[in-house]
Image (cartoon, rainbow, N blue to C red; front, side, top):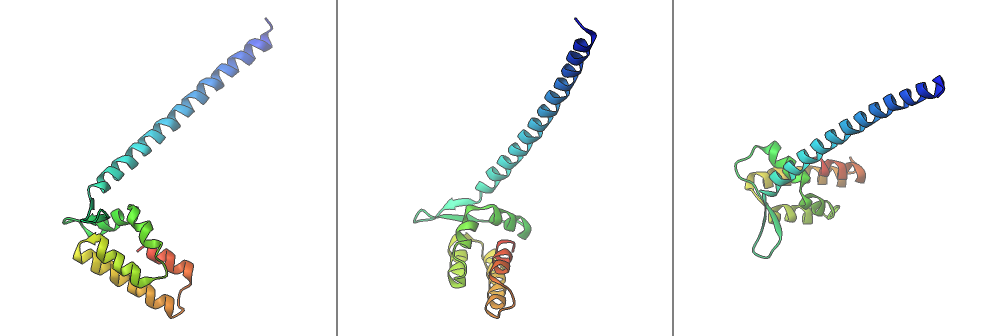
Length: 136
């Protein structure tokens, strides 16, 4: 065999080894991320329950506001709530009906009222209002 072919095969083997190692590292990082996301989702599901008529509700128990807000924003209820925009009355009713935590309800309703006032006063646009409501 020619010396050039041997060098070509050696370089190909080295590049293949590096590429396989790189792909394995990416796969492991992805698996860790997926596992972490599943753990967060499983933790969040502890706060989701069904009410008397079968609707999903959020029931918080002695959690800090930041944790409640994170669970709320990751919840499928959050998207359902956002679908009511720009009907702020319906959004507030949704909060009161589907979240079981008077303090969190009050804080969330106050923030919705602030966005409502700014939106109807023309201080913020529709996309800005949606962003503020989504990122309370």
